[in-house]
View (cartoon, rainbow, N blue to C red):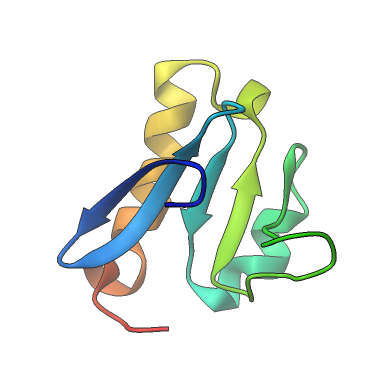
Length: 88
């Protein structure tokens, strides 16, 4: 799915590791502006100009190059709304 390997928690998709090395991360929509303001983070798209909505961001491979950084982003996704239980 999404051209890479996707991971689910509690039957909800939380992250997808893309072939490019980037990571799609499901986030709380209320944190979208905060997180997309960080370097190397942008709104996820499904094709040029087709955003995936405020629940999905794309994190550049360089941002998650070390284990601690990757763990931080996966943690944001898993903690989303109490463990990724909200449907959106």
